Image (cartoon, rainbow, N blue to C red; front, side, top):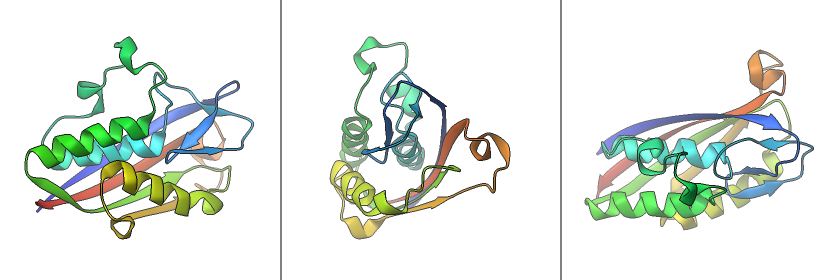
Length: 157
């Protein structure tokens, strides 16, 4: 078994869609980034790559490559899952946190789990997502951005 950790953060700005966990969420601002800026999926991909000792998403999907401009992060997660499977691992489990003052993520968590499990090629029972605020502290508390943390356990396939 191998374990990896991932972290990501993106700034909230006007004029962008808010996509978290592969789900478009109604909100007055969205996340700024080269791809769709899906902070949760990015943290999960980094956790998977870390567990596999395969670097990080910047190595595999650099923001200097126009190929990844506005990329759907779920498609990138499917590629990371293939990388991991190709070297002989399967997902034991994924556990992740989304950290934001607003919006409330509770109504979206089940759909996020479904989309992430499908893209990662694993059973939904192996994907857990939680959401929390930081009690108005820090950049997430001031609604300047959203962050996410994830861990992933890989097992021999």
